[in-house]
Length: 618
Image (cartoon, rainbow, N blue to C red; front, side, top):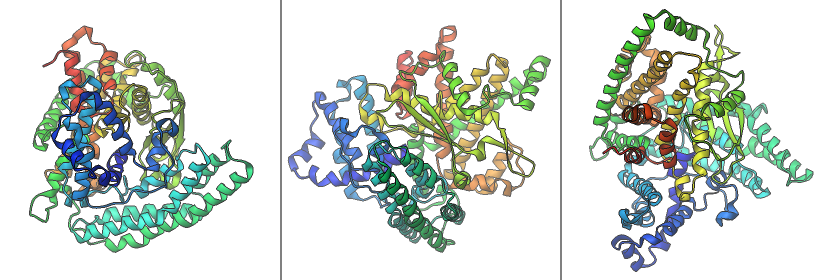
């Protein structure tokens, strides 16, 4: 949700374009005159409201008490694609680019970080060309496409008032026209030489078919989840509840079904029109430039938070692979030659003693205790609600998801788990009732504590400019959550030896480095399926080329998605190792983590500067 909000809400800015340019003198001031630092907070608060615009979907998710922010209810709209235009670019620079007219050295620490975030946003937008608009898969895609995420987004839509319920209905009514716009944009992309790969089309169509089946046989989670919410609303009387339940059933069966049916019926017409079924590196722009590699470089910077060339990133990741392999070899030798450690390792791998509670909810409660020594305390103690992804979405949904809570509420937090990922399967591939304990152990740390949920609750309680609570770097948030899930192995220190825990963490670091390299290989170096297979064969027991096709196609579809998890995680590990080495026995993990958490979800290069400054590193 956060990343899409960042990219899509900016389209709203064109609404204020004519107002801003209405005065030539104002336009001159924006670009030529240094601004008074005492006006910085007022200016950035204005930008906060401009960023939200009248985006009812984002406001509902981000803000619970809109009246306290002076916000009204707005007519529901769903984001639709468009090609970047000069008008949009000028508008964004006019509204947000004026931040550069403040003297950075005259700002306080909080203002400097807000400045950094806004300048990074503007520079990222300016780096993209109009033609690069056709390279995005933000609207239709089997993993991150809107048709994949929208059902859950709407099912979790907040019902604070009767107007929210009415707006929810309106959002569903918008689906047919919105999905048609998505398809028409895919047609335009294909005509420009940027058509969707056949395997992505097949995945999207299959997903639509599954969702339609759920609607037709009345098994879709949209019925039960939303109707239960409606029936529990204290501000509706019995007659109103019945009306909205019936209306919800009706719009799901008509409008929602119509939208998914339209994609299912029309998207296959674009099969065979893709000129590239491989990574971004294979795209050549209309001017003959390697537009795919250029675009990937922009995405890489945005996803990781580091202004590093992809060539340097390749060298960095390659060095990490070598270092982790060497460390694993050393640890492996130590474990294999020590009977106590070896027996401990064998016991761990055969019995999977990771979960310290029999339920996900119980494990999350235990994490609240485990993090006390190494992470700063939260100022609130929200109730954590664990939900499970409906069967109709299991094949096309993430293993788990934390639903970002509004920036002004602190009572409840929600985590979704995908049964297809958290339960073990039998010899026939059927899900059993046995939990995959290691996977769930780290997943709950990633989504819950000390991962996404913890980080979000911690930062939204901080007294910082509100714009920093809605503009979030995915490299920070996902990098932190990946760091948290692997840090969780340290919570087992009273069960397993230090060498075993170190081995588990280093193993995950190696995997992170390998997948980061594969993403760079596919999208920057232009690796084919066969080249990816050859690379993976050096480290994993992979079978034939066809055995890795699904992984290859997933990476082709979502460039840099792994980088925001893995490359960013490796950089956080660097910070941890560097400071721990410098401080030695006086190293305080809680203090170190507080510096990172106090920065909030900003590009990690800025966090690294803060950490270095805090510890006197030049």
